[in-house]
Every structure is written in structure tokens, then in C-alpha cells.
Image 1: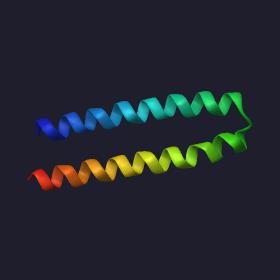
Image 2 (image 1 turned 120 degrees about the vertical axis):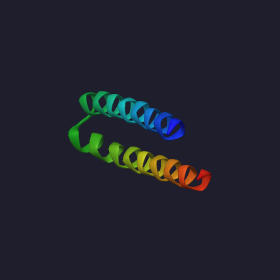
Image 3 (image 1 turned 90 degrees about the vertical axis):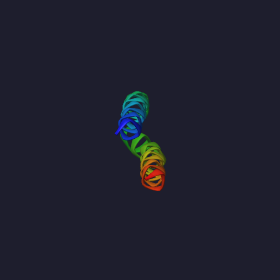
Length: 60
């Protein structure tokens, strides 16, 4: 449980950081540019999530 909790915390921090960055970028650029910029960020978050899940399942 301790490992999954820390992993959840890391994901939460990553998600909040990404959201903050995305919001800042979207406000400084046009909406379309902001959306295009969001795509790689979202992909990155998904990759991190998948990696964390794989690591957690392999530890068990």
C-alpha cells in the first residue's frame, strides 16, 4: 500500500504541475496553439501512468 500511495502522490504532483503549465501556456498563446501543445503533455502523462502501473504490478 505504501508504494501505491507514493506513486499516486507522484502522479498527483505531475498532474497538477502539467495542468498549471498548460493553463499558463494556453493563456499566453491562442487557444489552438495551446491545444496543440497539450497533446504531447497528455501523452507524457499517460506514459508515466502506464509505467507506474507496470512497475507496481511487477513488484507484486
